[in-house]
Length: 93
Length: 341
Image (cartoon, rainbow over all chains, first blue to last red):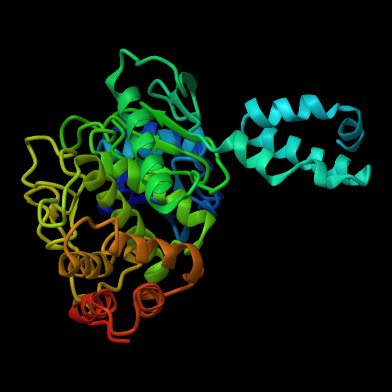
């Protein structure tokens, strides 16, 4: 499974991209990541960008596995707790 | 709700208008108007009564205590004493300075021009590298201490966020591509103006930087953006180089950052800087006034850079005359960044 996180926007407008293939991870990390993907229901999650507001950070998350893929865009105020945990995990990479 | 309307006595509604939060006030005001109309005596709520009670600052600062739930715990409100937490005081004072500029110079009463409460939340998230406007309030992170200090450290950041609120209630520029970059631009313009106003600086004394002081000493950069020289604010091994253009020929087409709203704002930012420099004196008196009137009355949701150039010229012409030095300064400012009307 491949997961890509692109962070853009925010007051600073910085751009950062992080890409992880679960096959490149050790056993514990891989299990942890798969668990986070599952609890965030990443293959079925939907984009949630605010209609109002400005300077929010945009988290674009793409997940791919065996021909299936899903891409979503969320922000700090619109993401679930499970998605935040996933984003925090990916950001530390 | 309609039952409650008619059983809440008007004197209580008037108290709610005076002391309630925005939602309560709006409800009370509507209810009062409805019930007064119902009784056929709507003139009894005079406009003066309504405006009299809200012509003052109403600031509220909340603490998210490292969490992500807004607004958090109320830690300081209007007239309350200083907090022991300097971040709280910075958010409070910065919001006050911004309110004062708009009130004293442009006769605007808060974010919505109807006395709306100014709400800020500090200590949002963990090592959170951002400040934003969520559509209702301002939110500030503490920074990670590696790249960023706390976001309340720069007063122009606070004024920048509050101006997003004003834009939402006025031109309501969509947050995408050129209208989005104009939205960012307006926030930078009044962000910088508030800082100059507080420091009583003339245009040639100002630094024209956005977010000066936000970077830690580990970063090779002076600020997030420069209106004087877009693209020169930072150049760092980790962050890369400030990507802002200062001319239309270098406009950046991208899907990131809502179509580069924080990147291409460099172009109108520089046009404003050039206009203000040509006019000299205090930026808020002429250039700022022209931009404010354009934002309030003439820009629309989907206005682009060219439209902004047209309407700021139109405002300058209306206020100062067709061949005035003010009109010429606005025209020249836009022309130098590659936008001719």
